[in-house]
Length: 165
Image (cartoon, rainbow, N blue to C red; front, side, top):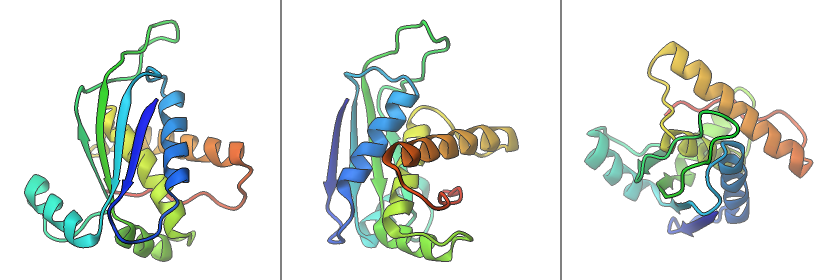
């Protein structure tokens, strides 16, 4: 996988963890190993501008996804995964810090950014959470990916609760 993480936020974030969990999520979803992804970490002002421009919603949000080639996971295990440009995920550590602190299972900004990275990857792969069945599927996958990555890394404690964005 070619994954670029660019932190333009001015806030220190665990960029290696963002890279690692994005790579884990893409491998788990069986996306072609030559596919490309960009993750950009921005401040609240930049995120608010994107949120207004693309969603016509005020204020900054936690994560936004901008798909390029609209790649999807292969339908069957023996199908060849498609290769291409996944797109961009934009994260906002200021919003992530607030959400992590206010979550039922309080967690760090970096843990929230990891969760949001997986959330963004799933959006790039066509998953959504508008309808109840979509929400159950997407958040189930999100939890399984985050839990699997945390277990692989030997991280303990409760995983962050699902993020709605």
